[in-house]
Length: 569
Image 1 (cartoon, rainbow, N blue to C red):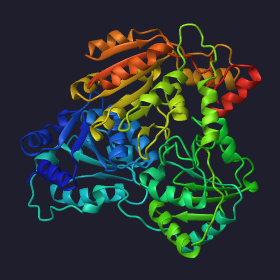
Image 2 (cartoon, rainbow, N blue to C red):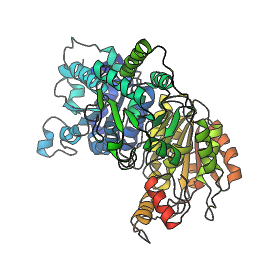
Image 3 (cartoon, rainbow, N blue to C red):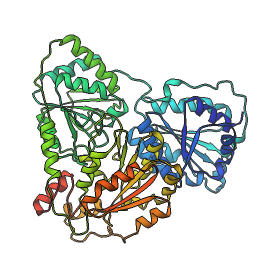
Image 4 (cartoon, rainbow, N blue to C red):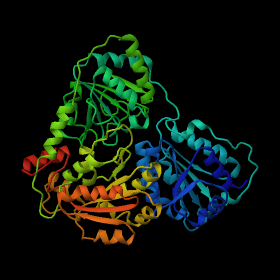
C-alpha cells in the first residue's frame, strides 16, 4: 500500500466521515487515492482558517475527533482554529502536507518547520517519515487527542509519503478513540466523600460549569445531582447548555461575557462554589472579581486537567477526573449514605423571568437608524426550532444571545470561541455545525468579523445546507471601541471605524437569499422566512455600537453607571 491508501484506510477504521480542508500541490497524491478509493466526504473551504474553525465546531457538536487537512503553502493559516481547539479542549487530527523530507533545508518553496510551529498549540506534533509507521502514528494520534484533556494532534506528511509504499501488517484501529472522552477516570474516592460533606454543609452552594461538563457529556448526572442536593447551576459562556436553561435550578450564563446581574450576584454571594470543567479564566470570572474575597467562601474544583484544579482559587477539595464518571460516583455515594436526604426546594425561574422581562421590556431608546439586538434575540428565542444550532462571534453578536437566548435541551446547541476570542469564527463554525447536524444553523456575526470570511459564503452556498448568517452591523470594531471609551476614557477611539459595505449585494452575488431588518416589527417574519428556507440565507440588522448601548459586560456596566449611559444587565 502507498501512504495515501494507508492514511485513508486508518481514517475509515476510526469512523471518520468528514474532512475539512483546502487543496495544494503537496496533497495531489493523497487526493488521487481519495477520489478513487474512499467514501469519506471532503468539505472544501476557501480558506484554511475557515477549515480549521469548521473542524473545531464539527468536533464540538459530534463528540468525535474531526480531521483537518491543509497544504504546506497554507499551513500557517490553520493556527487560529487549532489554537481555539487547544484552549477549548477539542480534539482535531490535523494533517499538513509538506515538501519532501529535508528539502526545507535547501530553502524549497513553502518549506517551514511545521512541527515546531504547531508543537506549542497541539498535544503532540508528529513528522511522518516512512509509510510503515502510519498505522502506529494514527492510532497514537487518535488516542492522544481524545484521552485526558482532549486537544489537537498535528501530523506533518511530506509529499513523498503519499506515493511511497510498504507492506502493512498492523492495519487496525482502537475503537474507543473514535469518540471523546475516550477514558473516564474517577477522581479520588476519599476526596469525593469530602466534597459531599462540604456541599451538604453549605448554606448557599452553587455549581459553576465550564465547557468541560459538555465535553464529558455530564448533563444528565449533573442535573440529577443538582436536583437531589437542590444546588443551582451556572455556566460559563462556552458551557452554555450544560443543563436546560429553563430548569428551576439553572442560573444560566455567569461571568463577563453574557452574565446578567442576577446570576453574577447569585454566584458572588454563594458560600460554597463547586467548579466543574472550567479553567476559571478571566472571562468567566470577570477578571477573577466575580466571587469577591476568595477567603470568604469554600471552593471545590473537578476537572480532567490537573493544571486547572485550584489554579486561580484556593480549593478545599481538588478533584482530578472525568466530570461525568466522578459525578456518577458522587451520586451513588449520596444515594447509598444519605437515603432520606431532604433539602429545601430551590426555584430560580421567577428570579430569571423577572430579570429577563426587565431587559425585554426596558424599551431603551435606540439611536437613529438602528434596531435593538435585545428584540432580535427575544424573537429568535421564541421561534428557534429545538434542533437548531447557534454559532456566535466574540463581540456584540455573541453577548446578547449568550445572555438572552434560552437553550431548552441540554447539549452543544450554542457555540462560541470564547477560549481565544479571535474574529472570524462564527461563519466557519456554522459550516462545521451544518455538516455535524441536520437542523438549521444560525450564525451571528459582526461586520468586523464578517470581512475575514466572506469568501466562504461560496462554501455555504455550494453545500446546500440550511445556514442563516445574521450580521449585527455597526461599521466599527465595536468591542475595541467600547473598551477604549468606557474603560480607558478615550473620546475618539483610533482605528476602530471602517467604511460601509453593501453586504446584501455581496451576499446576493454568492447566491444567498437576503433580507434587511430595519424595524422591530419586521424581525419575526424575516427570521421565520430565513430559518424555513433550506439553503443559504443572509440577514443584516443595524445595531448600536457597544459604547452607545452597553451590553452584558460587568466592567462596562460599572462604567456606564458612572457615565450615565444606557445599558443592559
